Length: 519
Image (cartoon, rainbow, N blue to C red; front, top):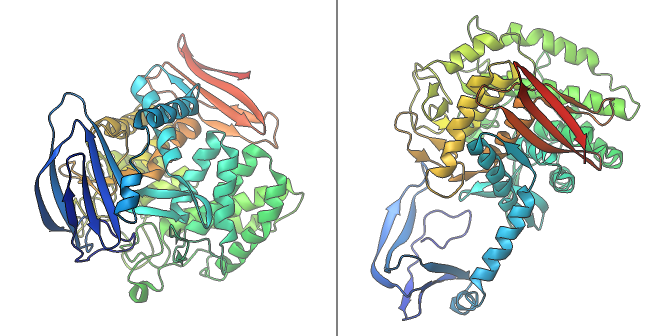
């Protein structure tokens, strides 16, 4: 155990231990933990341990060996600011609370998805439940923590990948509130990189959070038809775009990481690396955010005046970033570094080289039994357990799954999804891990990462089923399924404006057919 402030690593506080018959109490100067069990257990050993749960994060914890003998046991861990509060928190009916929670989660996933592949169905439903556990009300507003246990903050970048999945689930209110929380804290044309739990610290050092926010807003507006919210958020979008226009190069691409040496971190999701000046994935997000802004302005009957800019950027994208066999990760400082960021242009429909990219991603350079490496294993800097220089991320693996479905390789897409879905059942926690050792498959980082759940849902809805919803178009729902051989039928419940539909894709003879039914 380690009772500490959320932003704190090393401390030398000790614990007073009260080994009572019915409960065991551990008290430090900033908080207390009480352990109570049925049947009663005993503390058999305690000792302090120093460790580094993440590189550079030296911590000290108390290890407690607690023994009891039973076929079934109920153990309650209760926290408080002091001993009295920790003990008082035991005074609730655990069975009743668990029953209420189970009923709530069952209601949440009921009729959400049906699939002949029960592993995929269960992974989808557990993704919904995990997203719900990561939705928090903070002094800053509603938002999604990036993961447990290390990222209990609202991260703008992570939210940009997560909010579209919340929209896909028809949870418009939650998506709107998450967008509003980030939008109201925009400063100097930047959506927050992260907002701490107490909202006292808001960090803005991120280049992609603002772009993903615009893309997420577009996803929400397209399915909800919430014009009032669009009008309210328009000044936020325009401030972001005007700010970003000032940091473009002569070709119109975004320059990032210019303060890397000063900040000792990068502005992209690979923030341990210096990827300046023009990072590949950022350009894909930049182009897509401009397209989203154009479309939202058309919904308001306005001309954004950016159409020519978008066409120019699209035209120059492959010219600037294609190496002849793969995408450059960035222009400087390591131009030809091969990373999984090459998948992002495929997701945003920017690449004319999808087949070539996927051939490399599918090869042993990137793909392992556990998923897709961040960095190709023939790179000089490759390290199978390095955070951004070789470990397998479920994020990059899900990007690969989405891209495979999008470009017609549905069996490979399902193969990548299965690498993720099996993670839910490894430790019995029904969670999706942040990253893995590319050599051993050892779990690294967070035990539960929010964007994994979101991208699993999106891989099914947007990419396997090919569901495209636009409330401003007739028909509002278009479906282009790409079912792998292992999937014979899948049904999803979807929302357009305030109306719900059942969308089914199934095999009939040698064809894949679709059905859309009003509910």
